[in-house]
Image 1 (cartoon, rainbow, N blue to C red):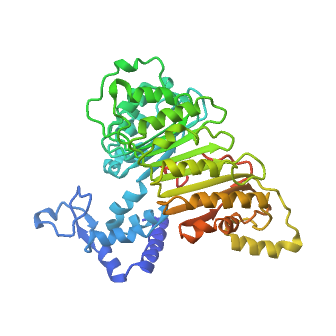
Image 2: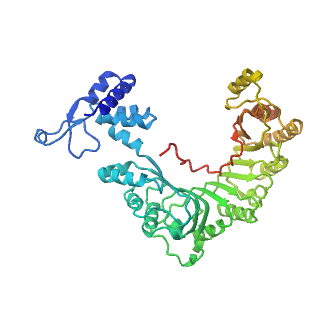
Image 3: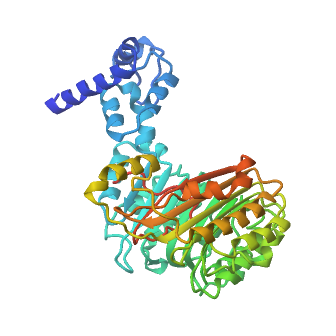
Length: 490
């Protein structure tokens, strides 16, 4: 055994000893006899006739639930690896967590490494549940020649979430082997979430074959305009149909809607959650939003909308008054007027919403405020700035004045009266995210909102939070049902 392995085992033993009783650790490390092909090792000794040919393995003499509980309290990958080396009893549980989420770029060496691992240990494919692939920046170029990525995807049959992110690409440029691998993945019965961003000329069959998908995200996805939608073969199995949709309201969504509803399709018959991202300066956003709402108005219970302050056609859509089952509404407003915290038109439009959706029980208003003025921090005020940082919890100085404070306070009090009129409202979440960078001094928006929303505050339904966005950073698209962005680096 090499010195590095001995050192790793000693450190791992120390880590486990600090959190696990010594008696339990001794039981796990006692050499026991196990079967050659065991995946989940048994605690019951095997028959004597097998003893001569069976290898020695570390077989737990404690319930597997206790092993799983220990592993559940570990958060970093190096500790998983260390536990796997110290005691074989931890290997199955650690493998589940090490290989559960796979995220890699198409041009990295990750597909090759994963392929080699799966060839050595095919059972690891059982643990891979979430696969995220990032497209490279090179146009019209998906994978390197000889890449094992298609072979890797063909070995994975238990994927729950599949995401294809990255720069713009054309489906027509995908090598046939990779295209077939993609189609196979989305046809898996285990697939629950499908997220596709920025791909052109996607075949309509791509959606028709997603037979078990519950959550679908399509951002800047363009279906192949040369396909005759009316002559597409129907799916071979009955579809469960999506429950949650993420859509960008660009001109391409019309083609997607047409595909989904062709030949009397019931594709939207089960949608309970809808999230939309309007496109600024797009004349088709409002029309597409109306079409989407008309398709889900009899089923949707939650609606998430992100829009820019000066493009309010989505909020004024007549179809919004037909959402009879709407219970949760989240409005994410990207403010564009310098110095303004919330739009002037918001109280009047929410008043209309109050009459058309009396059963609304949860409302979220999130305001992305433009650049806050920069106030240099002098050496004499370092201590006071440090105090403001610790109080704000933002990591940046708080203090400063609310822009147009008097006008904003009057607008908030008007909004307070409207919100108090929602009889079924049980939760009201207010979020403010100003754009700034240290050493900016950010006004305390949270305290200002609480002070001027007294009516809903007295009802005990108000929660207020404040964050910040780095200066010059774009507001990310609204993807409330995705939650598959990389948690760690490759």
